[in-house]
Length: 218
Ligand code: MD6
Ligand code: FE
Image (cartoon, rainbow, N blue to C red; front, side, top):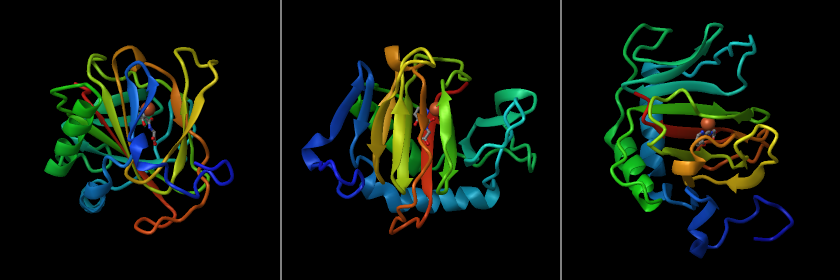
């Protein structure tokens, strides 16, 4: 990759699996061939469970809009963060995980050494230019033994991958359309986030980035 424009070129194809930690990997382009089907599935989910901006327990509205698919969905409000079986906006169950989601999550996890991963939750985040995700740990799930599988679609982003303490300086890793990040084991609780998105419009999604994170929450 050249040093000039981070987003000018995709990395070479032989970089397909990049280790970020002992049990954390970027799988470059792993979801590329399924991207159109994933995007169509996200559109169908969003018709039933609309993207919305949730409020953190501290009272701030998140810059990222989110929705969920699966038996459990991640929600936030003034009372805290939690997983819930029903969408608080409609009181309907979250839309089920489509087959294309389940197959991709399972095969990406296996590629990173986590065999038999069956998620019960997919958090779907939508970013527009300027949106960001501050450093956090994913710790609302019951079982830290299962990995997390994260799929990037649309505009590129800079993923911040820190350590076990919030103050640990994060690595900065560019993520592109079709990339998948998998982590678990000793890396499962590392701090991570997304730097404020720049506007590099994408051919399929325009000025948006969609991130799917698959978890075993229950
Ligand atoms: C994002 N991802 O990529 C935000 N969490 O938009 C996450 O917060 C995340 O990518 C846990 C595991 C993988 C992730
Ligand atoms: Fe996270």
